[in-house]
Length: 560
Ligand code: ATP
Ligand code: MG
Image (cartoon, rainbow, N blue to C red; front, side, top):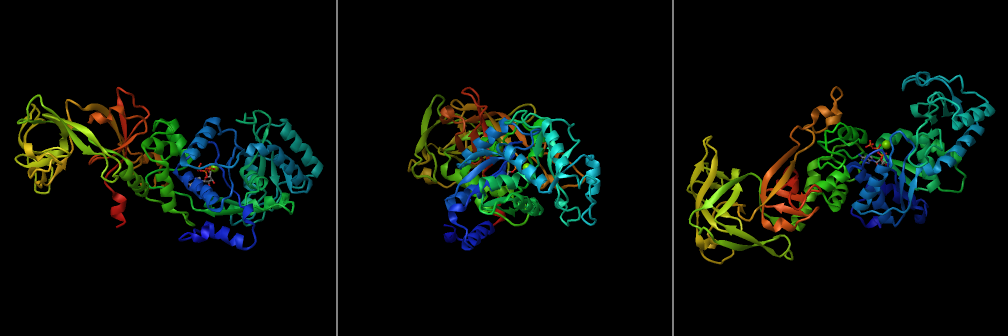
């Protein structure tokens, strides 16, 4: 139970308080209410982990409710993607529900409002309605239609429903107060006319309910005990309660809306509208582009469900808006993959290295540990031969003492293999090194137990045997934006901050032959480089790897 946890977040405090004040714990019920107008992102994961997490903590049902009241933006594709992502994150909903299931009930309640003198049809233009709304410092003025008779309102509303009026010509408004301090209470619109096909109800309806009217009443229909939403809905709470009061029958549970801070992540944007722009303008390759902050993008990038859940837990639920450092998310995936991902060798920027004193046709099978962090991970065979690739940046003809990699006349250890010494280089006309010539210490093989194998040399570098290596494509991702908060600039569009170098494709990387059998989704640590997974685009003949995250740990450093 919640009491046993180290610290209760403020949401759990609210629930605890309600239980103490007599709420029966069998009445606890939560919901996650996505609008199917885009793919879920890491911000939604905060809400998912919160609501489904509460469900687990209190053993209470959690509904998945699609908030589908706007047929202009909603699609079945999004419904399917949202369900897939929630399941993948490891959560199960009690009921799959749709706000559109309640269109009839909402309509009947709208009639009830009219009958009770609490709603009226307004046929002014939207500009007139906006004008009369007033400002936060100035009260609004009444619509000339505010005092229509119940009969006339019923008749006009019926006509709206039947499709007798043009789109935008009439709305139904709640009759609350045009002088309320809270602008949202100044006779808000609850129905508008829309001649759009709905993804579930087809052409059944010509009128669609607005968000505020729908959300609270849907919570009421489902008997949700706690309706958690993001902070910007705080001013809506008064309206939420007003709407509930109009239909409350005195016996049922009255849902409670409470707000928490949106999850923002540095160097990205989170609004679906903006993510949709990136997709539609082909600034990324679809919703699941590995640079996107979507759940599907993160999954493709190599993030695991656990790492996202752990991140959500650590980042926590806040009362005030804030920006979470993306390095915290990276920390969690690295932390997990460090324990689970097999180590392999891959060379991304190859330069040829020849071991001149190694016999020409000799091949050896060396044994390499799969994961020093996991004693059950076992070992694998890595072939070695006279010609290998190393990273171009791991060699310098001359370098100062801090350069622990290979330089002329100095020694370095080849990971899992021998100590080598660089003697000379071959260059092309442009002066670029095309070959490094070395000699090896035959007795120094790692793990052989010999004196020479225990010899300490400063650096260890990775390599692949040229004869045995597999050519591969590697996609290196960087942050999608160069600015920490790309959508916080008033005078600049967020797209101005797109990082032009967010994707670098390497098409002549080489990986060790054990990767021949790797399949989509498999994850590896490329030693000294980072964590990589096999992308969906990968085929047997053309392996494609995504870099999930480099090894370097900026978050741990910052937070030492
Ligand atoms: P967006 O602006 O990205 O479209 P939204 O709030 O309109 O977000 P919905 O599909 O309506 O998206 O959200 C479903 C649920 O997820 C809501 O309860 C919403 O409050 C929550 N949610 C959305 N974005 C975030 C976020 N960044 N952090 C935490 N919760 C979020
Ligand atoms: Mg929304």
